[in-house]
Image (cartoon, rainbow, N blue to C red):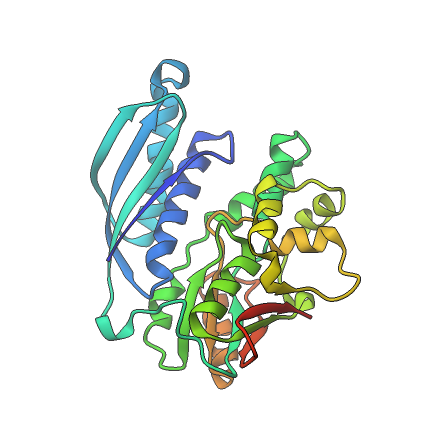
Length: 286
């Protein structure tokens, strides 16, 4: 399998930009149960404005994450551009019988989420100059943590479907799984892990425009509980960069999947809901 991911910066530090972009690209392979074996870099940079040293730092950040994944950056392509864009073509391997898709969830499956929500909100706070040092560290730490556990989950017959939570937010990617599988996805909002700093910013109305566009695009297929506050909906629709894996597995495997995620460096992993039959595919928040 091969995936291509282009990325524009959500951070100002070139090295962190490269790291986050690389982790984001690798996640596409892990989300299908694959094991990456090499990457190619795609670079478009405004050299006259950015400078060669900044570009070298971006590439170094990407190479550092690829080294963590145990793969080389074997080449790539670069052009001059008006905006800084960096991405990877990631090649990976998975047995054809073990490819994990987002449309194979089963009635009764438990939903497990690997990372906390809130990267988009913290990114919005950074752009507004409202993100403290500890918030920045929290954002970068979660966005650069690799979803390597996805490759091992492909070997578990009780894991039925998987995707990664990215631009459409948790509700959007859960809805994709529900529609593809012909089921209802129920999300228990009290169990959804969230970045601590993101909660305060969301309460203060610091959110991305993409969060609200997400809601406008799929909100008619989501049932929210009465009295749900706007900030909490914004967290559930918050676009994630290098977000966590969303796994649908048999109930008896749920704690095993959570344990595997935590052992792989994802301490916030938690059971967040279930898949079940209904009159029409949708997401319900409880």
